[in-house]
Amino acid sequence: MLTIQPLWVILFKKIALLLLIGYVVVGIALMFMQRSFIYFPPSATSHGLNEMTIRNGNESLKIIVSDGEYENAIIYFGGNAEAVYGYYHDFSHHFGDHSLYLVNYRGYGGSSGTPSESGLYEDALLLYDTIKPKHKNITVIGRSLGSGVATYLAARRDVGKLVLITPFDSLEAVASAQYTIYPISWMLFDKYDSIGRVKDIKAPTLILIAGDDTLIPNENSMRLYRAFRPDQADIRIFEGLGHNTIQSSPDYYRAMREFIDR
Image (tube, rainbow, N blue to C red; front, top):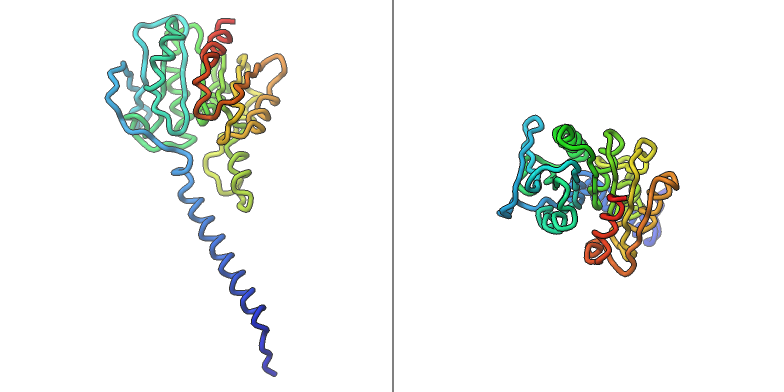
């Protein structure tokens, strides 16, 4: 006996099928394009600053360096779209008694290659091992994406001080909150699990948070802070400032300077 389904049932099935197809298509696009959502490499720019080149296999990495060599050094890992040369003069002004190493990630600012979590980690270790014989103490500063690289380095090398600016607990946690309908833990290639590395970090740590950060929610930064021992980490919250404006505070570099000198 032929059964004719009500029109609303047919429409419901078609809509459900379209939604399912859309879900799968968007999920596939997110999975295969995810690194284009994480990394925004600035192109090489003529800036007139000193650079050193280190080679890691087939890749050449451009590191902006200061004039002269000092007993103490700072390695800086910037954000996911950051042209680090733009911060050189500020760092030089506030940390003129340190050797400076501002890292252009793979694919950034004239460095060759394509950025990835494993590649950035390899490069961070290589840079540290290259410069360590010249310096007594090395402070590592990481901002936003760079905080994930900084925690990795601090967990595996003898770092004097660690500064994390607008950091996340893990990129996976941030992405999972943004894309709640997808299995991000399974889809994400680059997870930057900073909170999972805290147990291996021995360096005194300063965490700087932008109170009005809309890119890295404060709860993710606070979760990372609370993972440290109470006597290991200090925190400073810059109220009224956002993810990309935190450096406009007159206390931004002052807080780092006081922490490093302490």
